[in-house]
Amino acid sequence: MTNDEFNLWFSEAQNDFDVGKILFRKKKYNAASFHFVQAAEKAIKALLYYFNQKPWGHSILKLLEAYEEFGKKVPKDIKITANTLDPHYINTRYPDAFPGYNPMEYYTQNIAKEIRVAAQEILNFANNEKETMNANGSI
Image (cartoon, rainbow, N blue to C red; front, side, top):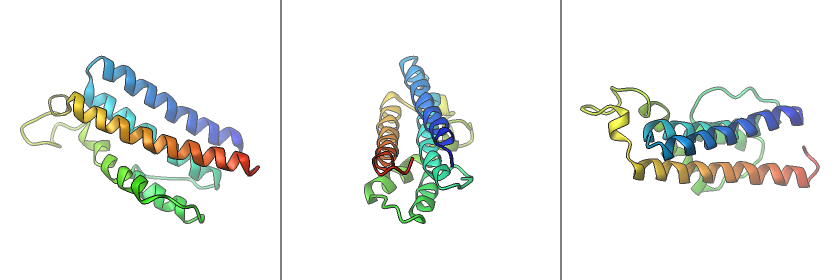
C-alpha cells in the first residue's frame, strides 16, 4: 500500500465523523449515527489497506479481526465497542429495523451521543496504530 491510499481512507473517515457532528447539531440523530459508524469502518479499512488488503463488508468487528491476522493486537474493549457499532449500519437507515418506529424517530440525542463516543474510540485506536507505524518507519 502507498501512504497516499492509507491517508485517503483515514481522511475520509475523519470527514465522515465531521459530517456526523454537523448532523448531530441539526438533530438528525439517525443520520449522524450512520456517519459516525462509517467513520469507524473507514478508519479500520485504512489500516487494512496498509497491508495491501481489499477490505470488504461493513462489520467493524470483522474488519478488526482481519487486522489481527497481521499479528496486530486489538484490545478487547475496542472489539466490544466495534460490536456495539455494527448494528447501526443498517438500523440507522431502514424503516423496518425497529417495528413501530422509523429510524429518525428511534434515534435520540443520547443514542447518537453514545455512538459518537464509540466511533471516536475506534478512530483513536486507528490513529494510534497509524502513529505507531509512522514511528516504526512502516508508513
